Image (cartoon, rainbow, N blue to C red; front, side, top):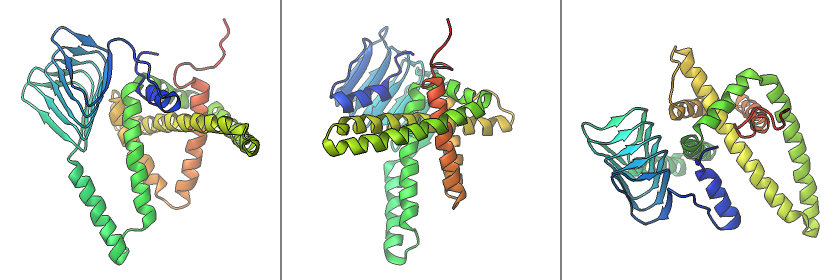
Length: 304
């Protein structure tokens, strides 16, 4: 697997408190980053800093707040959350550009070979939630459950963008295996959930004597990671299937995941059907993650 490790790094940070950084890869908090002309970086992840890319970034640029100014080349994705992204006339983005709750400036001459996903300013989102909340408090126009559901969808949207930006090949491979081995994946998923539930109950009982607390904590983290990767894989699967139905064969992973998320979210809002659909998705998600080893191989054990 290549160095697309943002999600893994964040998990390691939460578990151990440290993040192992590879060379030619920047991860900073409120610090300016300059990729000079002729310089090459693998990935850039920044929180609140200003990023100037005059050279080349092989894979992705992820910014939370701050500003990204690109005059050079990015080989994969540019993703900003509440960031100001400026693509100068000489900018070349070989993948996708996604701006969520920020500002995107594309100057004439810049090239984006993939898709552009742009949700305007955070004030618009905030205003929408405020109006909905006022309506709920005054005349109960919006049920609390619906608000929670919308927040959940938005969180899944952010997670899906992050994982797809850094693991597009793994997500694509795992999705392809759903079509290739649907029933084996269903069986693996159902068995995995049963075993995992048993382990959770067993570790919870052990927690009464403190021994099971670290085991329970580790199982929760493992289950959380499997659920996220499996769910995003299904977003891609449904989005790709939807686009293929309209006769388009080659699509951007980010676009497929966003469309899949929208489709899955709409179905999940349907009473009873939504609950059943979500449960089946969980089975398939667990099955595809276990069988493909997070999209890296078809089987855990291979004959030599």
